[in-house]
Image 1 (cartoon, one colour):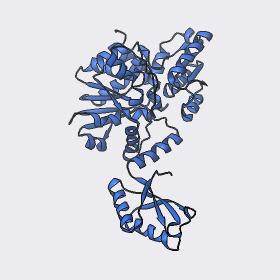
Image 2: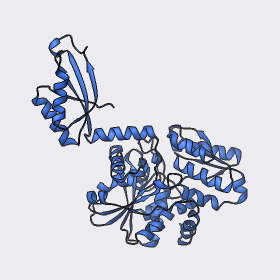
Image 3: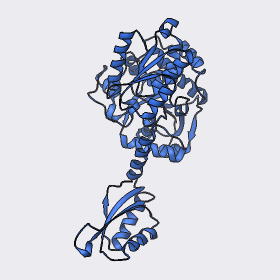
Length: 405
């Protein structure tokens, strides 16, 4: 464990500056008030490729020989490393082939192609895509660039910690998303070299917590499956080359559920006007799990490559979870004026009707012949309950149903 040295980190930080955009820390008043700490955001979602991965990819490729580059570069990725390798390869004039899981969001596939790489879709998860990329590398003689299980790649990712330290020398805690462990290795190792008192916490999705399972077992283990909306961190096995660094330098691993990521996405859009992908939000979602106060905490937002369809689904589910949108069903007699009565009750409570479904064929009983489904926008749970109570008092017997926009 002597490859990730201070000298190597300094060299990597200088090298990656050639291709990265400045991402100065952003102080979050909102998250600071919620957590009782001073919270800062390291917005790697604002990089040219939409994620931090360009750092490790570019530094790794810069260390290759001309012969290794000329053979062609191949990698496997759920999306962000793919774009990093594609962009870095283009900068040095090398051919790049990227194997991505078949479920990779379209935006990541298209942007990888835009940077000049050849894309092959294979496998359901990253690990299957990686095995296939290895077989192609062996068959055709390509140079394989691992997305995380490589000390040189991890050193490039560690340049983030050097920038954090320059902006906030008194940082107490750093929260880092974890997939295979490359980002966490780079940040935690460099942080401990700078100041052993800095706490670095890895954050995994609970549906793909391969590092937590490995640390508990004391060895690298492989999960049987992964199920999470955080596709960029849906990894079954952490990097075995990096595991000793993570054992030594990570202070803790926190897991968060998908529902927490959905809530974090809404927070980020509404309060910070930023789009951050689900994997990149792991650090923000973990804030409420911390048992600390009055500390300086940095959340690394690792990426922002989120396709619009996924974004729409996350927003809708987030609004429903927070009772900002809900749907009620009421049964009405089949006579004029009933719709106006229901609408008036909702309007009096400052509810906003955003969708109506009027079914006149619900029943042959004319006293309850019409079903009206109303989707309503509210300020939150208290306001929702206020509207439901008013409908009850109006004699409409509202029944909650699943909202569908």
